[in-house]
Length: 560
Image (cartoon, rainbow, N blue to C red; front, side, top):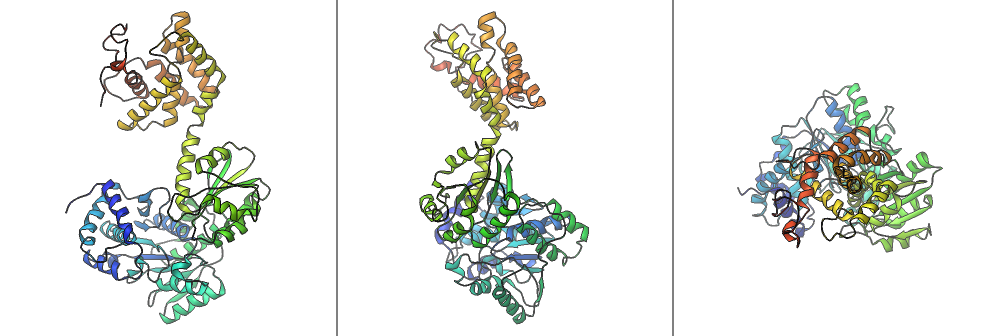
């Protein structure tokens, strides 16, 4: 077997997308048969439905972990990290393990006609991973539908779970609730156990009929849980009730496990607060039922607040109905185009929204974030396609994490001293200590941090780099050592810019010691010192022959 690395494995899966979606179970059955049918040896809780699959799975996962079980979980799609699709006890699969399983599967898949799709191969990865890791219980989330979904080749399940069913994926599942419910209820097994959330009457009729045909026992979960839950959003109390009922039918799970599991569950992207200033919520509402649930939560938690949306959806979603439900609640709406071939353009979405709210503007995601994160008097709610929420959260985290560094750039004391340094060096051609130099050092130091696995935050590195030469003016004026003088000045500026006392102490020490070139990078001061030297491109300088620096101080080689 030729073993791929992680990058190669991801590229292999992406390339397989050319094979499209293949309805039916023949292909996945053939693939898994050649892999030894790992799915047949798993104890599975199988979850289908339109909304709430992820949240129900998250609640159930944590309850089962609380009971001491080894719990596998397979979800689709991923939002924040590709490997979050494959988890054991809430830990993502490693890149090496993923590459190993894709390498194994590719040897079989490449000999098959038709070739397995990405989802079929990812499903096989999950089955192999959970079997070989000897999971006690496995939570498997349906990709789409149920009856012909690749996950439905499992021969039996501990519980078949059906979350609320609404209109979605009509192109593949049908144009009525009954047709969609027929596909979703296809996960029900002969003589099995079924737990369903509250459903529309026409949907419940389909589920009940499927249970009768397969002699399956049907349990209707309570509408809401009575226990404390960790996730915000009114609809989460309904999802928790479903997970609670499911876990009551798993051996070894106590009522205390259920209580603690619901309280300790973490599930990102579902009415999740990601920032306090401004208050910023992200939610995966991307269909009609999700929009209704989002509206309920906004009215309950933020009924008297100014609401601003960032929203983007796929073109195959019921975006006009989503707009009708959600748009009237907002004072301002920014539409974006998700980075996906299925995306609805921001302009077209804005046009649809304008029928219900004229204060709408089509912008890029970066522009929407820049505008919204500078607001102080509103609640920002980003919702729609899960494919853009992951990108939004990463960008938001980066912006928020660098706020204190931006405070340094705006700080009057910093700007005044930097201006004096620039004035003192106005006749210099080389080795200036202005903002260009400071940012060069910041970028180089951050790379050194990554290369040496120091795990120092970007904000700390950039903040220290911006201030490492702040004592230069005192050196020019009084002849003092600039690194020692800079430590005292940096301390005052960092305090004014909102850094914590332990951060200030750490950063000031690095400013004071950044002139000491170490043999290897082990501390913040080390990487600032090395970066400071590396960013002087002495080998390219016209003054290298007349420079007063010693040979040791000059940077005459690119260091790898």
